[in-house]
Image (cartoon, rainbow, N blue to C red; front, side, top):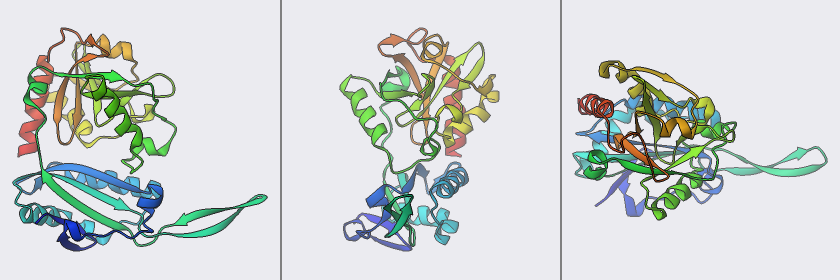
Amino acid sequence: MTWVYLDGVFVDAGQARVAAGDAGLLYGRGLFETFRARRGRVYLLERHLARLEAGAGTLGIELPAALGGLWDIVRELAERCGLDDARVRLTLTAGPSTLRLRSVQAGLRTSPEGGRPTLLLQARPATDYPERMYQQGASAIIVPVRRNETSPLSRVKSLNYLDNLLAREQARSAGADEALFLNTQGRLADGSASNVFLVKGGELLTPPVEDGALPGVTRGALLELAKGAGLGSREATLVSDDLLGADEAFLTNAVAGVLPLVSVDGVPVSSGAPGEATRRLRALYEAAAQG
């Protein structure tokens, strides 16, 4: 049996039901977090919760009281699914909604009103990224779709995720591992499922949230771990030429950790091979994440 946690109850995944009027289903009014649970333990879970809380504030979603016991929920879900190393997806929606009419100057429009939020957790085996991507490095393309850095959605992990999914499919069709977004000003933002970093002149750089970068949990950890790798670290406005002119580059997310990036649009980054600083940072991150 495959178990999920839905609104306070562990149920068979095949029997789980979400209301037809759920605002997440109807309007994409919801958030998600994806993290890795090793032996029931999640590295920096409190930061995932903090980002979820910030996103819920942005979208006007009430936080369920059950989130106070998230550690225990994750641990029990992994145990029920028989997973020592799990990839856990948490989905929070505004819940069943009703429509009410609002007067807008000369006309009328309908708007969703959120109800009791829906909380869903799912777990599956944490399949590692292919080892060749760590040893040889990953490739990326820059997609033509732009990240809208002026939108509040660029700062939250919302269910409005089609730009990311379509960009990743475009990358895979082009034989690349990841898709990178520029923002409306032509500045580097982030990847379809990752944050992007570069190393230049002994310094670790990553695009700021103001340029459209998602405030990634792993991103924040790497900025802090950089000192242990002998690097300074800071946010910096970057363009694609900065990436191609870097000494090293890598991608981050909570499942992959630190993934070397060795080419963009078919052009090698530096030597076209994973760099020493990236290896050091990956070792530091894995040591911290595995406890």
